[in-house]
Length: 442
Ligand code: 9YW
Image 1 (cartoon, rainbow, N blue to C red):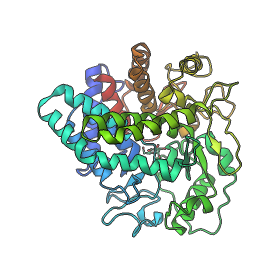
Image 2: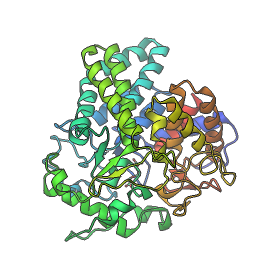
Image 3: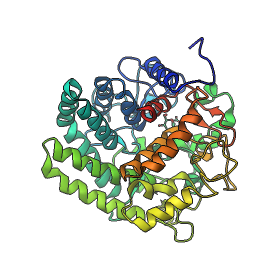
Image 4: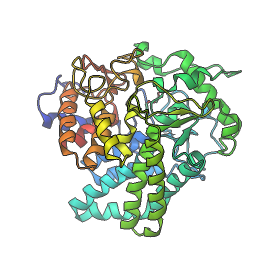
C-alpha cells in the first residue's frame, strides 16, 4: 500500500504489514496465492496460508482449509489449484479440461501438490487448543468433521501414487512437486516431446516482466503437453502410468507425506478416529524408509528417481534434504545437518543470509534469479525449520528464524529471493511469504 516504507524497521511493523498482505489478498472465498500473478487458491499455499492466518484468526484459517477440502475429487485427490472467478491466469480451467471430471460446482486443475495439510492442521489445532475457548471449539469441530477427507487424501496418494512398495510417491507433472522448473526435473523433461497442441499464450510473463525469473517457453510447452496427455485419458488414475511421458518418484513430496501421515495419526487419535491411526503410522513408516533409501552415500543427499528410465536424479537441490522432514535415523540426520550448514548450502559465506537456496549455491547449473533454479524461498525456510523444531531442535529453529526475519525486513514479501543480494523476486506480496512471517513472529 501507499505510504509503506522500506526496509521495515521493527518486528511489530513486519507483523502488521504481513497481516495487511493477507487481508489484501483475501477475496472473501479464499486468500489468493498472490495478488496479480496467482489469483487462485493453490493447495500447498493454502495450508501454509492457513497456519499463518491462525495467528490472527483461527476461524479464518479453518475457512481456508474448508474451501480447499471442499474441492476434493471423488477419488480423494485434492487438486493443486482451486480457481476463483478472477481472470488472467494461464492455464485456466478450460485449458485444464477438468470440467465434468472434477466434482459438480468445483473449478480445479487435475493434478495434486505436496500434502503439507495435515501437518499444518495439527499446528493450527495445537495453537487453538492452547488458546482455549471458541478457538479450541472451532478447531475441534473442524477436525472431527473433515478428518475422513484428509484420510481419504492420504489414502489416494498411497494407492494412486505410491502403492508399488517403493515408499515413494510418483508425480506426473513437475507442477505436482511445487518446484516447477527445478533442475531435478531437467532429465525427465528432456524426454518429454510435445506433439500436436492447441496454441497458447502465457500470462505469467506479462506480470513478471523480467522473463529470466520465470521458466522458458520451451519448458511451458512441455508443461502444457503433460496437461493434454492427462486430459486425453480423462485424468483417470489407472491410465496415467500407461500414457504419461513424465513420471518421477518425488523424494521431497514423499517425505512430506511421511511426516503428515504421522501428524494425521495423532489427529485421528485425538478426534474420534483412533482405529485409523495404525494404518496412517504404517504409511509414515513405509515412506520414511523409502526416503532414507534414496540417499546417495557419496553426497549425503536424498534423490528423486526417473520412473521411465530407472535413473537416479543427480542435481543438488533443496529436495535433497527430504530426510530432515521425515527420517528417524540419527546418523543420517546428523550428516544431513552437517551438509545443510556446510559451504555448499547455508554456510556459503557469499550468501546475504544463512538460508538454504533452492539449488546448492556451488552447483554449476545455479541460476540465482530464476524461480526454483537458485533463489531462496521463504516458505521452505519456515517449513524445514518447523520440521527441525518438531524434533526438539530449538537452536536451529531460532537460527533460521533470525536469518529469515532479517531477510524479510526488506519488506516486499517476495515470492523468492536472490541468495547473494537478498533482492526480492517474482511476485511481491506473496501470501505464503506473509503467512510464514506471521509464523516466525508467533
Ligand atoms: C505457476 C503458487 C504456486 C506455488 C508453486 C510455485 C508456483 C505456479 O506458484 O507455481 O503457475 O508457476 O512453483 O509451488 O504453489 O504460489
